[in-house]
Length: 240
Image 1 (cartoon, rainbow, N blue to C red):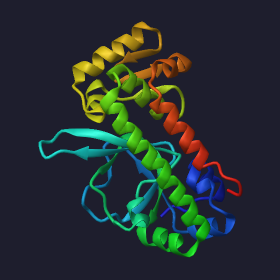
Image 2: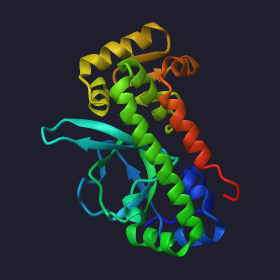
Image 3: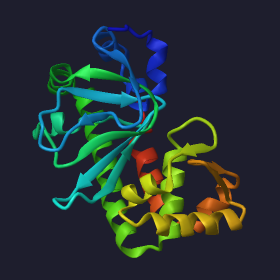
């Protein structure tokens, strides 16, 4: 186990918002972990053993159908955590949490998170506010996938990913993006071609470089702004 200095907490928003007393209790139990692409952190229907707090990695919450199709229903980066089921009383979820953008993060044993939630009103309040932010994201993603054009969905996905990675580049193939959006690869290719022709992005060999973020936001539907605003409102509270 790698122990983390207190300054490392600032790389994840939830850990950065922990009061000093709670951080001192968590710090010896937190383990720094590498999160490579494809690593499954939690599996659908399986007991959750750890809570994960991404620092530079991005984790997708994926729902898999019985026919093998998949769709991303949520995204977690340095603003949050994977493992909310632990404090919501379920212990497991119907979705899979898989790393889709490589990086690093921290993990905390399930028992330690549950104990902190039960013993610290401040921690409980913080995690419940994050749960509300995540519910907003899940609901808005469902609305977006049902009602908005594919190029708008792609803009929203790129902006959400960009918020959670360093720099202006997103690493993902059209096939991988298609799996996350629940659409065919050809549709993603056509949507990406439109964005590239408009000078908003540059795509080459599985790397998408965002050239005009403001333009991307203008082209996106309202879903990105709704989720971002709610996350900022809930996780920027007086006293944290």
